Amino acid sequence: MANPEQAFAIMVPFRRTPMIKALTFDLDDTLWDVWPVVERAERLLYQWLATRYPRIPERFMPLELRELSSEVIAARPDLAHDRTWLRKAALQLAARRAGYAEFDVEAAFAVFFAARNAVEPFAEVRPALERLARRYPLASLSNGNADLGLIGMDDLFVFSLSAIEVGAAKPDALMFEEACRRLQALPEQIVHIGDDPIHDVQGGLEAGFHTVWVNRAGRDWPGGTRADAEISNLAELEQVLERWEGGQEAGSFLSVKR
Ligand SMILES: [Mg+2]
Image 1 (cartoon, rainbow, N blue to C red):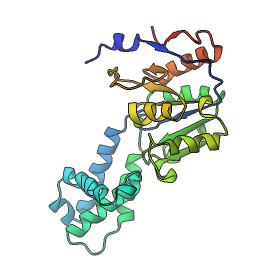
Image 2: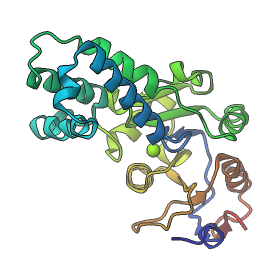
Image 3: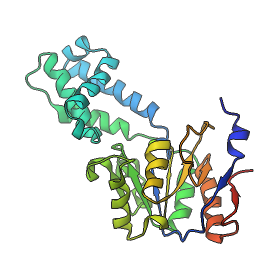
Image 4: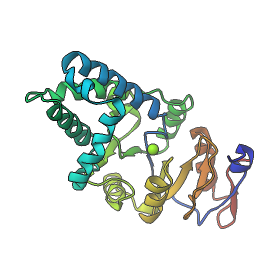
């Protein structure tokens, strides 16, 4: 277990002074905790199935229902990036195996989707994004199926890009290239902010973006090229960007948090 003091007191090398034109954000686990919400959504869906299609919960435990997703991915790896499709296909498979020839998959998914979007952003998120949105266009780049309109945060972002729409998931360069195209900016003019070392940091760096690793829990860096900066919340992001824009420490080392 990392000592949080130590984990954040790192010196992060910074390559050069960027001219930052836009910011892109991961959503799940960057702006809110996603797992408690997904677990609750799965619980509500399970209860709904028990009422409408009781043979499904009779046949499958909640975890077994989740495991059906792996089976669906194995059959259609080309659609694995589309979490909405994946969840619907797994539900349809469950219904078929439980002996239902007719199954209202849209109604079942709607129960899950409403609960999945009942997220609670971390306390500093909205105030920080509101301030940042006055200085930069903000966009979201998500592998999940969060709906910023339902969440009530779509006013902060110029657009939201999902893996479903793009046809590939981060770390695939397609996501980042599409963001550049829509933001009309070069990769090196964009800072991507996210919690996932592979999807967000590796994917962003390989696409030529500047990257900021959001490490709320004080985890150790798992290896690979490090992000340009590491923060434990979005208020710290503002400090990082101010320093970069000021170019005070370009070419040297930047202490993200003392
Ligand atoms: Mg994430």
